[in-house]
Image 1 (cartoon, rainbow over the protein chains, first blue to last red):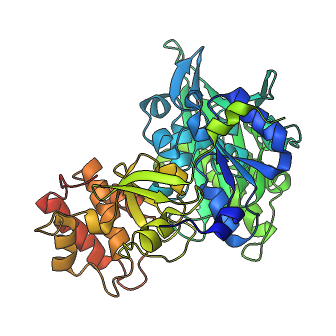
Image 2: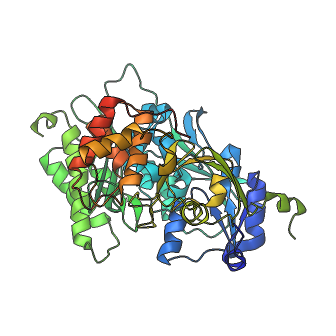
Image 3: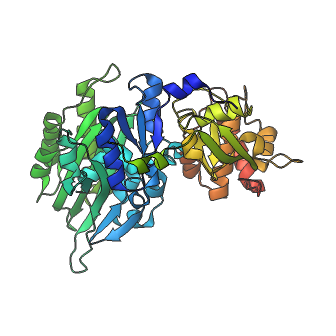
Length: 299
Length: 171
């Protein structure tokens, strides 16, 4: 098994830093010639498709132990970005505190890809299907720029333009404890529409996290919509219309119109923007309709 | 200036791992696909090359007991790992219970997806010996078959569940 010299010259050098500082140092040294890699599932498909060139250097973040794992920390669930999607899918902590994220992860690729792919990779991809769920969960992202930690919400990350080299070091989901004296009930919904039932690229992805009183009055609500190459955004107009109200037919019609107006999908030859807008709006109002106590039994 | 300690952080061009219970030491660039290592360097052609983007599951192998698409996995990710291909799933004398079930129930037609299917089913049953239909669909959604319509494959999985699809031979 002699090494092919030509292949050796074409192949990226793979570096396995032991610390966050070392990884950032490498990236600063080599700039655009170096790419951070986590599970590398997206990179490999991009190289195969020719949409990205193989870089000169790969910085493998799998060698930094502190970037993996799921733990409860200061009122939040802290997820290391190198945690695989499979580990997120099977996490008891996430099932208890963020079932919306578990549902989102279940809908990303297939089991074997999830064994390699990481939550951090999906977040940094920006249009990954975990991102709408993290926006709806009001998740915070922790980054390191080589000298200090930076914090921003998942919502800010999705809408920001990313320029300074930095490394995602933690994804934090706030833990909201149930108030035993309150009659409110939490609910969530995650819907992904693609061209196949399972293991499908998304055309439209919608994530909702909310809280409602016994009579259906919405006391908390966060809605995010993305899918395909559309950067996920919060549907703030629909949220404003629905907060404090019981989602009846007229209210949901207004929410439908608000999503139609605010959601601006990127199109491709497979689905028009109008189709995607209507799909997103339908998914949002159907989810809210079905969680309302007066409508749940009507299917 | 490049830190001198970084030299120690370079993944070398020697892959050392275990394939089907045997130690492997090979000169391979770290970004080489595991699929190429298995088929071209080790000559284990039971693992199939098909979509090459992780969608079809024909190249499925076990890495430390977990199914992964070998077309998406690079050599450096396998360093020190135990890899099981379709050739190493069963013992010397008998077929693996999942292989036997596919044979009895006609869980294949052209057979190209079959090694990957069997690897995924074996991994699923090792993790959960009695999966529900919903769990079967979730675990098998990364394996495509263009011939059977999946009826024979589902029958084979049911048969494997009945006979207890686990094996002690897995890596």
